[in-house]
Length: 361
Image (tube, rainbow, N blue to C red; front, side):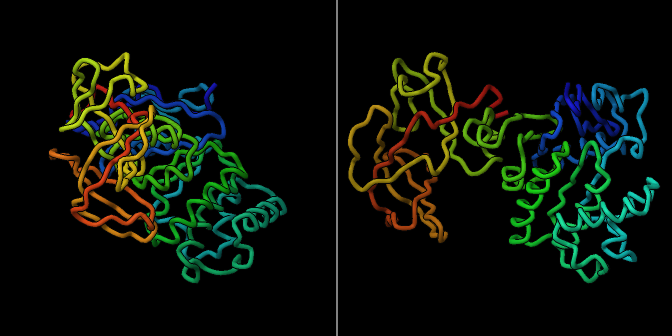
């Protein structure tokens, strides 16, 4: 049985459908991110789970029991869930220890147990030396840790996080991604994490649900989602990619002024008519001379039309010979090519992800 389940969940505001018939199940202790652009319905979904909004259709279930439906909804305070907002919402007039203890005091736990739990969680989030400080005396990262400690210390059945790192600078965001994952690995709380940042979702999640226009387009483990996106939207939202549109003609797939043998593709028996693929920039390799023939890869002549040095790698734009298509290619720092230099692109069709019928919609 799943710990948390969304079954055909919808939410409408007048004529606007914010969440459109989504279904998702989380196992006990699983960390799932809702990932998508602003306005895609991810925060509304989180608020439906928390009980802050009633669904227009479908149900939210916990341990097999419905807690939200159009007919009735369990109040948020009775759901045994903790939620962390973008603003952290920690009390400015309370010390770190008082903020963390607040939820335990509301539950009327014994003072000795409150002291023990607060002491333990402050050690875990590395805030024990700051227990008597006020929020104004803390950095943004420390305030975020207070919010995490306060949410976890009450031992919720489900933890909900709504863009919790959006107010932090880039370096601190990167650090806190790993901190959130570390805390999850220690406490194994079933977690739903809302973000528009694909790097955050990739680092923290067991699975990612990519949302677009109120619907879930794909749910998968981070690695599978990146390597095998099923739609053009998912491929473009999860990292950078090249879109290659082609058409099957006989024993070949014909693209813009180049062709690849149909037998080279993993999905060759299913390829018919017009097809489209996602090809990541790091899956293309550049050479000054044609590389040795291989049964696994194919080679395409081209020309460098643009480049940018980004420290950790080069970002090249390469146009295959006689075509209008422009491919992004990522190369290591020592792989230096000049603009207008003629090159050979080595492509492994096995790394080209076939996109589904929703392409272009």
